[in-house]
Image (cartoon, rainbow, N blue to C red; front, side, top):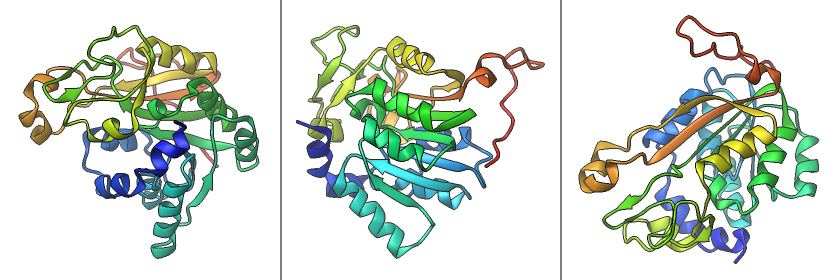
Length: 261
């Protein structure tokens, strides 16, 4: 089943379950990694119904959102008509050549962001190639994903099938009763090294990693799952600005200078 069909069929469920209230730790951390964001040109890939795009626009960014699902893009455009924020949405496959070409015409962007979308994209290399192509030198790519090393818990599916090995990559459909979205649409499991090496291959160099803990109410109901890393959030810098940052006083490297449009 294609990515189009997977998300077109669950658009109502998805939009109802993930509202504009940015109260989950991973999304908050992702947004904080991008500050200062005001005045910067941002592309959100796999934008869905526009939840993160709207949050970025409210923080002052100039935003373009792209997604493979026409149904979700329709919901994003409806929200834009109802409460205009100046966001432009595109129905596009960001992993495909024609989509990459279309987006290049809108770039370059200061930031490309992907919120919990990379595991839904079947062609990771194609999507990251597009992100890198539309970023200006020194631009930032940031994403959040279910942690590739998350083994799950009682009623909660991990990042890979329970009967399989962590190193066995591929698409699969979760069966945990508490894993509501992934039971419906599945996900692609990839190792942590696959993600990091794909970014590096496209000249995107990790600048900061975060592993935010799940919300206390989530953890209280799933204590066995909450013992493990659940989310991974990271930001990368394109090109030499990411590879050759001078060390900071704490030895961790200084952050890149704020981007300009």
